[in-house]
Structures are given as structure tokens and as C-alpha cells.
Length: 638
Image (tube, rainbow, N blue to C red; front, side, top):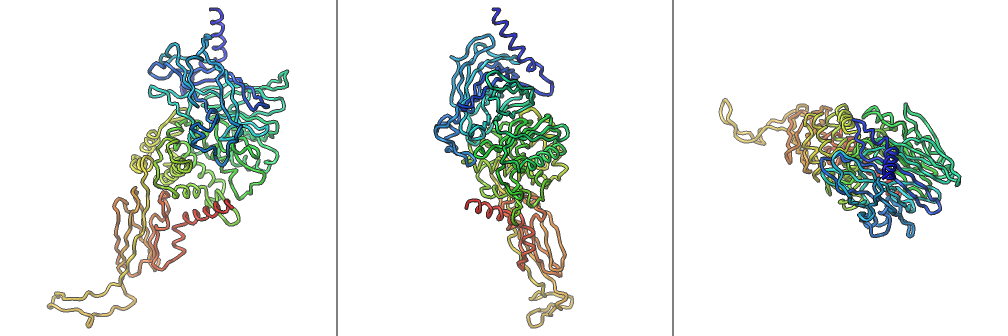
């Protein structure tokens, strides 16, 4: 009995901070982890104490954990079968698999749970001796071994570079009276509860470590190793990286410390990283709200370690540069800004990325384009290289119009046909929906929408209906139907100028009753009108080729320079406009300010009677940029 009391006391002492639950943040899952990197075996020996609190209204009789690393155990896992062993052009190497083994799992009082543990690939379930009542806690003690794969799908090793992502047993989210605990799929990311982490990482003594949270000291050990200690509060994941070859650059932006871990042959990108991360901190802070942590860490993976790049974790992101990346290719900045954006829409607004990825990826893609437009000219915010200009917005537009009607935005990540469609409907289409909403509601309203959403759902798990409710609140329900159609449906927007017909107005022929009697007007006696006073009837037909309706503006230009603007609710399949003017109609343009960026074909948005190329280019500039992007992609394949 005395041993049990001492053991419980030690658990409580170690997890003391976990009991201090702030009112504004619901810390549900807290971890104390000790990790030792076995660099020669490319493995991590781990020990963790998990403190989990039941915040539901029902008893919990079992626990569910994610064992993400088992996705790389063999070719028969969901991840490997769906990805076919390839992720972002990186391939897993035969014989260099990854996995996680549970060596022991038990309660604070020493009772083992090994016999009640069932592992199904990346999911572990454990039946408990007693149910956890609502509002009560449980402490678990787990020892594990994580075998890292050759760097692949955001985690692993290359030579003496190590990226530990999704590397420890992580408890799932309990909601709606059950565990939300999906398999790790090729297109899915992650979902976890907020908590506090205290992590000790032991590595060979010549290694440097970068990690989530803030360093709390380091200790040299007698076995030629060094232990780095980190603490992270109010986060829902913990990742780290280690290498003896890391160089470190530091900077400060207001109250935030910036740490960049990079390799010598990538030194040319240091200034670009710093410029990009400062811009992201600045504009996100101005538009949406203050970054609440004191540090942001960036890891620039080495050559052949690119599989670890382009990923986000709380207070830590991985970038992507190279030995030589021309300044006109803004990829270093783009990836940095995008991954930092996840600090807000994934790190702080922790939606379920398995089931509603767009709430993170889509809002982040929209925000990335906005920041890139501040960093560079808006027409070339992604590429400005040898006369080729491509905006960050163009990337999203081209990807969307390549397959605009296949799936809804609202769909579980693994249910898309492939990674391309997952990208279109989780990244690109949502970004265009938000740009269209911004154009219709106005920049001030859009900023208010996202700031309200950010303020209201920090450290929570919002859903799609929560976002739509904020839009409804701020705009007065103006765009409710539009959002529901675009998020839950597969319809598209496509308005077109169908035809322009012009006729000169002449005296009508036939019998007419006049004051002095009936007369006949024919070709023989019709009076010719002087050319200077000719009158023209212009008839224009606008068609809705898509299935989703939005109000549209239509601009009619006449030969003498006169312009007439019309507003159409866009609901019917077609609309006819007629004008009787002294001048012929010259050009017609739908949505001349390009507000409805979701229109899948901007070429048919305008038509000119004389083939005025300048006018047509004015109203199809987005399409021209799309073509530039296509050509760039083709060149990259050579």
C-alpha cells in the first residue's frame, strides 16, 4: 500500500501543472515524456505519463490512442496502400520502414493494461478496470520504441538528420459519447486535444535539438549524451528535430523569438525565411489576432530530407529551400507563410482534419495568398521569373478549374479519389470561396469574420457549421445559401455572354393608321435617315451555365465610350438586355471587377463585336495567368 501511495504522489508531482486548468483553455490531454534518440539504430526509446481528463457527460470505459508511426510498418497499411508508397514525390525505401512498439502500459497504481490492449494498425484501444466518471482524471504510464523510417511523409531520418513527427502514443479525442479515432490515411492529417507537454530529449552530445515549445535547460550526461528539456503549454501536439550539422539563426519580431535551424548549403535562404516569417507574424496579428506563444521555430530540412518539409506543428514548422532557389521563385516564402498560417487555423483553431480538412487548409491557403500579396506584387506573388508572373491566387484557381465538379468541400479526407482531388477541395476551392466572399462582403467584413472566428474558437474544436454561423452573424445571413452550396455541394459557377445582336433602327414597313388616314410604307417610299442620327437596337443574352447562383454585375460598353452597368440576381438560366442607343454596343463583360473568382471559365465572361483584344484580356487576365502556370508546370517536367 505504501508503494502505491508513493507512486501516486510521484505522478501527481510530475503532472502538477496539468491540474492547474485555466478557465479559458480546456487542457484535456497532458504529457510528461522522456525520449532518447538512438542515432545508430534510427530509433527513439520513449517513456510517457499521460494525464487525461473526461470532460464529457458520460462514463468512459476504454481509451483510444493513435500510433501514427505504424502507417509506415509495411505495404499493407491504409497509408501505404492509398499512397502507393509515395508522398509529395518522396518514396519510402524498402527495408527502411517505421513503426511503434508498446513495451508496457499501465495505471498509476502499477496495474498493467497490456492484456486489455488491442492494436489495429495505427489505432490502439485499451479497456479499463474501472470507468472514468465525468469530470474525473486518469494517469497512464507507457513505455515505447519508435523506429523511424527513411524520411517520408513528414517524419523520419536521413543520414544524421532526424525529424520526429507523430512519434509517440497520442490519445484521441472523445466526443459525442465516443472516441473520434480514425486510421492514419494518406490524405488525412491530425486531431487531438489541448494540453501541456514537458519533454526531455536525449541525443548524442554533438547534436542540436529544435522542438515545440520553449527550452528549459540542457544537461550533459556521463555517457556522451546531452538532454534537452522543453515545455509547451496549451498545444495539441509535440514534434522535434535533431542533427549535429544544424546552424541556428535567430531574430525577434515584437515579443516573439524566431529560431531557424538550417544547413550550411542552405545559408542563402536564411534572410528569405526571416523576411517571410516576420511578414506572417505581422499580418496575421493585424488581421486575425495576436500569436499567443513566445517562440516560433523553423526547420529547413537538408538535401534528400525534403520529405520532412512543408509541415506544421504547434510553435514549429518545417520549410523547404535548396542549394539554389532563384529569388524570382518565391517558394521559400510561400511555404514559410503557409506553414505559419497553420499556427492559427490548425494550431490554435483545432478542427478535425480527418473529417473537415478545409477549415484549416482552405483558410490557410486563402491567408497565405493574402500575405504573399503583401510581400510581393499581387500579380507575381508566387513566381516572377524570366517574364513569367504567377500569383499565389493563380495556383489555387488553376488547380480548382482542372476538376471543379468532382466532390464537395465537406468530405472526410480519405474519401477523395486521390491526393489531387483532396488538394483541390481542401485547399484550392475553399480558398476561392473565401476570396469570393471577401469580394462580395468587402474586406472589412471579411476581416471581421475571420477575427471573430479566431477569437471565439481559440483552443477549441470548431466545425463547419460554426464558421458558417459566424459569417451569418457578421453579414446578416447574406451569403448563407452560397456557402452551403459551395461547401456541401458539387455545383459550379459559370456565367457567359451568349450573344450580342445589333440592328439599325429604320422606319417600319406596312400599313399604318395615321391622323389623316391609312398609309402604306414600303421600300419605295421609306425615308432614309441621316447617318449622323442613326439609332441602334442592341440585344444581349447572358446565360448561367453553372448550377450555383450569385448576383452578378454586367458592364456594357458602347463605341463612343458610354458605359452602362446592370445588376442581375443570376438565378434564371438566361437574361436578355436590350438597348436603343445612338451608338452600337462594343463589348459586354460579366463581373468586370472579377469578384466571383469561383467562375470556372473567365474567357466566356466577355465578348466584343470587333474582337477588341485589349478589352478581352482585361476581363480574362486570371485565365492568362492560369496559362502561364500551365506552361511553367510543363517546363518543370522536362
